[in-house]
Figure 1 (cartoon, rainbow, N blue to C red):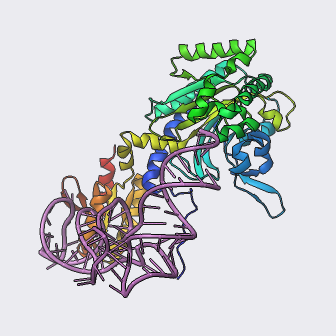
Figure 2: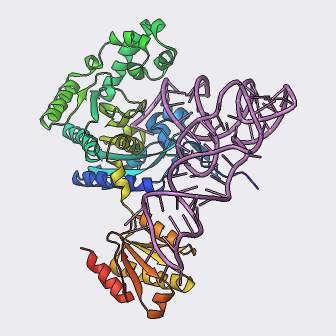
Figure 3: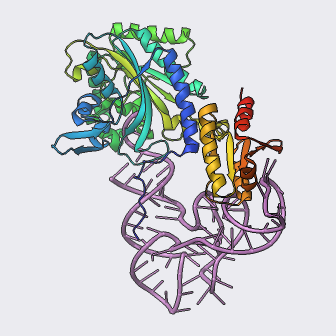
Amino acid sequence: MSAPVSSLPGMSDILPEEATLWQWVEGRCREVLRNAGFGEIRTPILERTDLFVRTTGEGSEVVQKQMFTFDDRSGRSLSLRPEGTPSIMRAYLSSQGDGGPVRWYYMGPMFRSERPQAGRKRQFHQLGAEAIGSESVIVDAEMIGLTYDLCSSVGLPEAVVLVNSIGSAEDQAAIKGLLAGYFTDHREALCADCSRRLEGNVLRILDCKNEQCQAVIEGAPPIAEAIGVEGRREFDRLISLLDRAAIPFRMEPRLVRGLDYYTRTVWEVRHDALGAQDALGGGGRYDRLAESLGQKAYRPGVGFAMGLERMLLAIQAGKGAQDLRAEGGPDVWLVSMGAPAEEANFLWAREVRSKLGLSVQGDFDGRSMKAQMRMANRSGARWVVICGEDELAKGVFCLKDLQSGEQWEVSGQDAVVQLGGTQE
RNA sequence: GUGGGCGUAGCUCAGUUGGUUAGAGCGUCUGGUUGUGGCCCAGAAGGCCGGGGGUUCGAAUCCCCUCGCUCACCCCA
């Protein structure tokens, strides 16, 4: 006897009951994305490590210590994707040489080797959308609106979208210099984490939750000051567009992102039912991403990703999740008494499934009739088809309506016809 | 990577200052009905009390180690 094999930490099974809820969420999102003109792209889960080092960023926490990285048989370094955007850009560059605009969305598992927590798994699922090839701020507004629409379409209209601009690639050098200067002067007052951030990602200090740091952050020069005139005018236009489109959002001057490629517009959507990991999704513009993959021509883009687990958590924190779970039971349950009857039911079920498209299920392990009827009742099936020695002798089946309790004998063919008649 | 909380039946959980055969509810199975569900009644099965070591006459209970889950820090979706 050996010990049972368990799943890996932070990687869990999604059982059928819960999967129906996933399917519902995915279905609603696909509809919203389709209406916004997005087509689905599916990229490999495994990529060259270099893809993420060059895009997500060598300095980012994600690349530095959260990737599942290993060498393949030929010694190449591979990584399970920690996020979707780099793969999408890679696919875009290799398929759209002319730089034309595309709108692509993806859905699937991502991997980060962090300590698991509420709303944070090691294998988690993201739904992301990318609009590549356009520089228009109107597209930024569309994407932010889409972020909100996805939330409201799955019953989370209370989600809050936070928007900010972190400046163009050129502005960022100035911004980082400005902040680095300020925070270095106040280094003594910063927490240990922020001291570390001073060396790596200065912007991250802005959203430190530590109270000591808050006071210092209050006095920090606003990012907006270091953004060029044109950048500020463009951001004002975005805000105006969001207002006029009645997209609920809030300006958040301290909002920053953890991935290296973001420039200009950034946003995040939060939900307060989530606990510490309260971001349902986040995104931004990434005008230099293509460049980091060796593309010479300018290929701007903007996109975001939503955490499916987090959306599910927020939905389940509210009401209505149970109704969604109830779906999925069979239409007809088979009750068989004796091996010959089990065979007759097996054959009949195949016929009904193919002719009527009904969901038919039964138990073939010789349980008592009482037990089988209980299973039928519990399954949620409306109909029960009973077959035993008597029916076999007469060449009929018993058809029972579990709702009314009535039952009658019919031939196998008539049972198909009558069940067909109950469908609209 | 750092810290806190929790590991007892398939599930949710009780279990007294350490004390004799470790309990409940739900679920499962059987019977009350020759072959009929929900409600009810009766009964049964099901536990290395996460694992290992220690203290003790005696450990689910106390101590140490370990593994797992979970929440928070960090990070991010």
